[in-house]
Image (cartoon, rainbow, N blue to C red; front, side):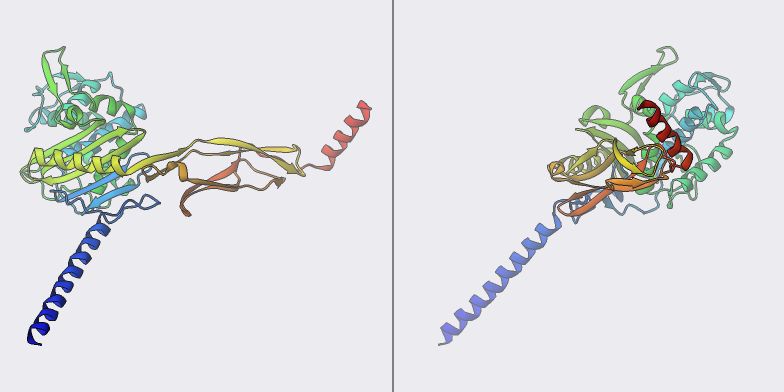
Length: 395
């Protein structure tokens, strides 16, 4: 009896251990859950070896993964993403041109760290300076461009903070244009904010044209440039964007990559080494490309009948739609068009008269309005009379 009692007790312990192990395994499986139907961040934990990270779809701004993404941290030279954005916006606005020549000030020439060794009084085109900032992370060129655009570095920094606020970058405060932080006291941003400004920057196609260059030269071939972003050469599909490192910020990067129509922005902050930073970025981009796909529906038009209008028909228009869905499920997206068969005049250009809704597994992933392309006036007595008269004359 005693032996039987001991055997039963041991069996109970073994069963308890087995159940505990099964519970642990189930928990682990749940943590690695696949993306949800609406493409939102799931429970996957990549355990990246950095202080902060985020993965964002460049087309929609949808966040696919985040790790402590709102922590305000020093960004080092990733700061230059905002510097480049303001320069590109000044070009678009016609304030400056790529061919303009910039005269280097003593202040710009005095910058340390990564540089192309500008001399006071030297002149260089805006385009060459842009390449130096993007490819070689040149601090001296960043300051020279800032002074050229705003008249002073301080004025440019004020514009940087203003633009950050406009973009909704709530964890950001800039103190300079290049990210040097030896004397900075509150020069910070977050992974989320970097992704936001990176998305704004790459809307300028010229930037990706430059940031995808591995090696180039300036000064008529006399000075070589090598991209600080090694992913451009070694990660398939990488298109840019900007690296940064200081003792305070450690190793940071905003990396962009595109495969099969999916364009991603990956931000890594405060990794211990360059290699760890690059490995984290590659791991995060791999996760995005392995698990997500871009669903696209093109813009279009349709015609509906109109009652009581000067025209019997009306042309409607709807915008293109973009969303991120779990990979392999794009064909399962259902499209529901909700537009009346007949509209009643008057109709004004831009009036929303319906919607197109997109669903995956019954979950709405987005919608676009259907609007009147060209207004239709309500028919009046004079119009009716003219129509009747025309028909009478044709009899």
